Length: 224
Ligand SMILES: Nc1ncnc2c1ncn2[C@@H]1O[C@H](COP(=O)(O)OP(=O)(O)OP(=O)(O)O)[C@@H](O)[C@H]1O
Ligand SMILES: [Mg+2]
Image 1 (cartoon, protein in one colour):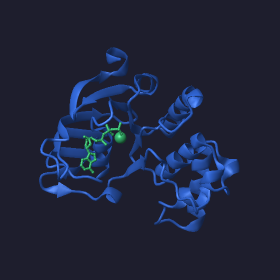
Image 2: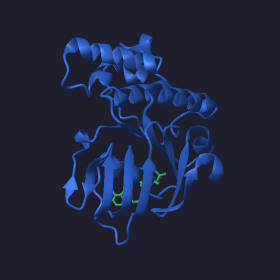
Image 3: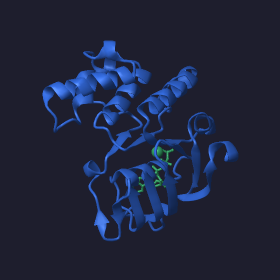
Image 4: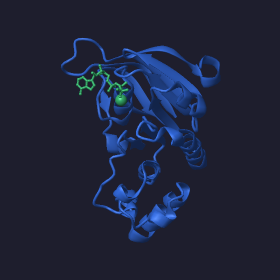
């Protein structure tokens, strides 16, 4: 589903590679965790996969289509990727329903509403559809962000620190919920965390990043 080969990336003002020789292969439906300390390059890597940053060497393909190599760069909106940002980035002036329908540009109103309702059901928020984001809890807002990312039916879901904004007591509940949502949606996912326990609970495969380099990778149960 996703193949990344010998990828190198550098921010404009950086003298060294911020991502160095990154390799990854993910099969359909797998959940991959990228684990690493602050500044190790986790968010950068998600942004490169989404097409929000451009690498300078290597290649990325999604569902057998090249989206990046030295001669090609596919724009983010054409990559079929859904992204949930660390702060969820919901539109505060739009209801939950409108937030979820936001990315559904090309389809008619009836289909849009049906898709929105399906997504609300998936994340268990049907009764909150007409509320605004500030009227929901952190965990509920996160589920709206996931529903919005999944609505256009992406082939890959990227989640940046899905647990960092949430109450520690809720951590376990949210982990279980998130795992259930991902499995129900049957979507290939990559999530970023600095917490080993998150990776253990959620990931099939794990990549450990340090200073932009993979220092360890493999099956979660073997390496964590
Ligand atoms: N826009 C930018 N311009 C230049 N350097 C950047 C930029 N964004 C991040 N960096 C640098 O790139 C490196 C990786 O940053 P990144 O945000 O990917 O880390 P991270 O692993 O997501 O950290 P955190 O856990 O704190 O979110 C850091 O050294 C950071 O200072
Ligand atoms: Mg980050």
